[in-house]
Image 1 (cartoon, rainbow, N blue to C red):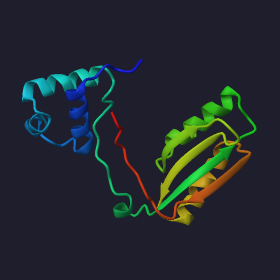
Image 2: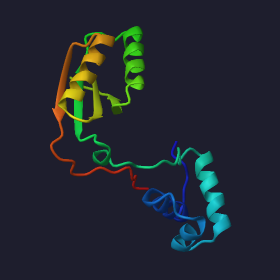
Image 3: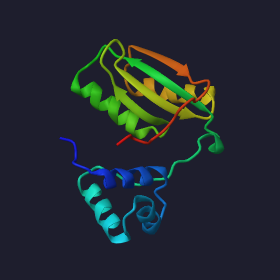
Length: 153
């Protein structure tokens, strides 16, 4: 069941998503509120699970991680033991930024960020040595057109 949030909560969430390093005073000014009510609302939104965590976004290219691959995984095994090994492998690989289980012909899609094609091959070889996979298709992103963490609330 979605959390019940009002217009001021939405404004606070917008400001936090834009720049979570803003002071409470700045957020209060921008939302037409004051510091203490903003702080109380943020605490409430955390308690409700609307705000999961605060973090910092890094520029992957500035860190030398210039290659982004979307990896399509098909498996012929769907038992709990295989899935447990597969998920454990994914969680242990820092190159995997996202992993989704899908409906349809493809079982999983991974977003993998690495330095280059050779680094992707190293990741791929490690993955297939850990778990049996029926088919893997890697798609290299040529250009990131849109990437955001902002949710419209």
